[in-house]
Length: 104
Image 1 (cartoon, rainbow, N blue to C red):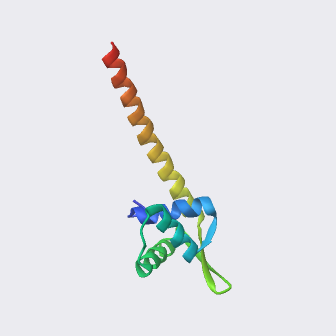
Image 2: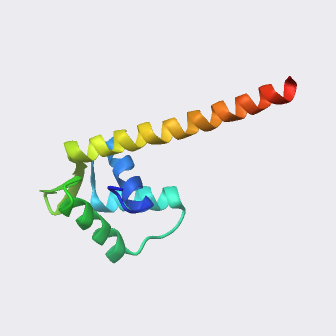
Image 3: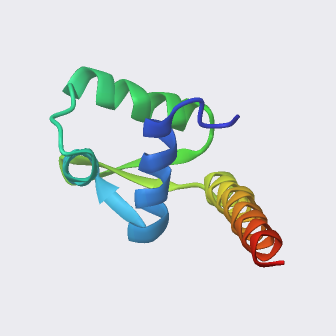
């Protein structure tokens, strides 16, 4: 899978929604979502891996690095969304089918 970890997936999802964010702001949003403090070295290594893979682009704005999704990264988020939605809908249909069998 393209993200290889939930952290990579979630970073890309945040950027899909936000557009571009400074690294620290992105880290804060992810920490708030996870309700934990992330190790900065590990966090920035994850961003570097996503940049190296072509899913994120890094720009310098003033003294800060700003991150955004590439077109390829956005397509991957959309593809994951489609895949996940299909799993959920399939599960919901299965539950509805099971409920109908019980009533019969």
